[in-house]
Structure formats: structure tokens, C-alpha cells
Length: 259
Image (cartoon, rainbow, N blue to C red; front, side, top):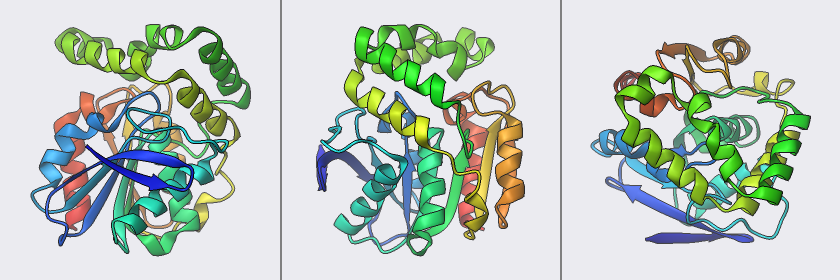
């Protein structure tokens, strides 16, 4: 296991591939960990140096002492790049990780080559919804969130085809640290980049799941139409599209980074 200390937090990190090759950073969604990227990391490691990390408050990373904000999540990525002496990288984030990517595209464009924003939006949910979820988790733990997660993350058809995979994801969700998860809910309650994303100038791929009830195709189109150098790709999946539509997602990602 590899850990990197960034300001107030110790982040769990995994690297694959040759460090001399271009770097791709993969950023997980709320309630998951770096293992969600296993299929894409294996594919990318043939041609890239792949850097994955558990977002603070998730997996084996700490949640730190400072309040979690979207800026804090973005600065964690900059800190990781600095620690590994990576001057620039491609970045691919899903859901909350996609919001982190948007922040980087706005505030740290000099550290990015290409940007992939999957199943995300410039504003996810509402302040009231995230505040209520944070309170629920702090009071009652992760079970209440995990009980309804499968319906948000995957289509019923995928759940029927891959019940073991879905259950493994839910087990990891139940094991997440409640305080870390709630702190990231607090960050999402405040995060609204709708007025800022037009500043993103790096080549950007937006990936949407056609059946995603959390960040819809309309959310993805808004990103693609507002970001000057953006293209949109749709896949037949719900919210965790890199797992449900593994092969189409990976192919879109591979082609975009190679172009």
C-alpha cells in the first residue's frame, strides 16, 4: 500500500504503469474507492502512468481536520501530482470526481492535459438534499444510504446480470467512514460551478449514462455545450457507467486520450 501526506490528510494511492509515460489520474465517486477503476486502470497502464487515489474520507484515506470543500478536493490532486513529481496529467473523474476535475480545469489548467468528466454536473443535487444526507449518515451510519444505492448506481438489468459485482460495491459503501462520507456531502452541498465552467479550456470529454437518474444526459449536455473544447459521449448505463458500460466507457476514454 502507498500513502501520501497532503496538508492535513494521508491519502491512499495506487500507481500502475511506467512513470516515464504520460500520467492519467482517476478520481472516484462518492461512496466508492479507487478499486472502482480496476478495469480502466488495467487498460490504461499499457500506455500511461496511472495514478489512482481514495478521495479523502473514502476507502483507506483519512478525512483530515479541515472542512471538506470542492477546492480542498482539487488541491489534494495538485498535492499528489507535486508529491509524485508529475508536472501535468490527464484527469478522469466520475460524479464527485468529475466535479473535482471541473475545479481543476477552472483553477489549475496548467496541471492538466486532457479532462474527462463522467456522470457528473456543474451542480449535483441540492444544498438541502446533501445537508439532509450528511445528517442522516452522521446520525445513523451508512446503511440507510447503501439500502437505496443500487437503484441510483445501476440499471435493474445490470443488477440482474451482475448481482455479485453490485453487492460488492454496496459492501464497500457500507464500510465507508461515516464522518468522511458526510464531510464530502457537505462539500457537494456547497459546490456550484455553473457560472465558472466556461473558463475550462483544455480538451474535454463528457461521458453520460443514458439511464442515469443522478446526473442526467441533460446535465452532461450542459457541460459539453458550455466548455469550449468539449465533446459528449453517451453510454447505456446508469450512474456508475465505467462499471456498467465498462467496454464502451473504456473505449471512449482510450480514443480520447490517444487523439
